[in-house]
Image (tube, rainbow, N blue to C red; front, side, top):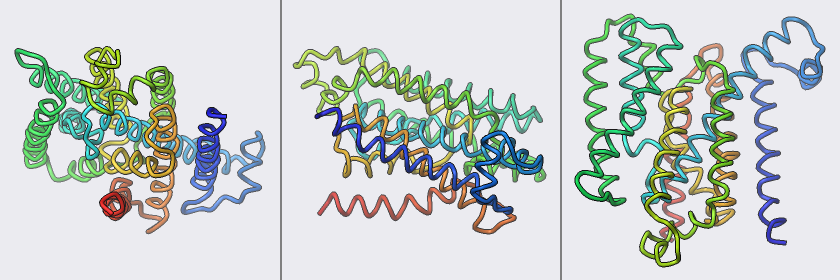
Length: 325
């Protein structure tokens, strides 16, 4: 009965996610009918429709799905690790490191593949710096890790501002779009989807330990949880999936912050359910946001990060007010 009760929300979220993917593939500057979509997905359809759906819209939609799922899972993990409901995937400065790496690559005129590699390398450098500085000469705590991350994020922000000031005018639009989050230039969605699936497989067996850790490290240790290795594992995994998300689509805010909060009101705080639910809900949210970014002023496109911010601010304020009530 317990597993059946936990499975029902996941089934509903999976159906909602599938509907969002189909809607995203269908809408745009040229609308695709349901019949044409089914025809293409079953191996038929005209050459133009196959190119539009299979080579343009579907890869972009799957990239949005993977990125949203990664950010939401990373946000849920960070909130457990730091015991802070305001924690999100970017709170430790990982996006700043990734952005600095990507902007340096763009400034050097490197190809898009190398830009993605530089972004991932920058995020990993930021991870190592925060972890090393927070650890210091002794053992790190959640508060020390958080404060170190906030300071490092400010430092990365200063470096990004300097890079933008030194950038030739003709290169600025691409850099600004990357900083605001943009799915349009995402490459193959399969690496990000693979990382998302692997992350869920790794954290699912840790669900009970994560539930205890969310109540505090001392209580978790008293109940037999090996706290320090678990915290290291959470930090490294959250950093890896955040780096993958930022590398795929740039800096997209609020997904990792609001999705776990929304789901806690619906499914509770059991990490065994919350983490896969976050992957589905985060992916659904970003797919819908990207579809809106493509259509609201078509044929022009907005950065998807603008849409998530416009959605995220009022939603978070509502959730904060509801929690306070």
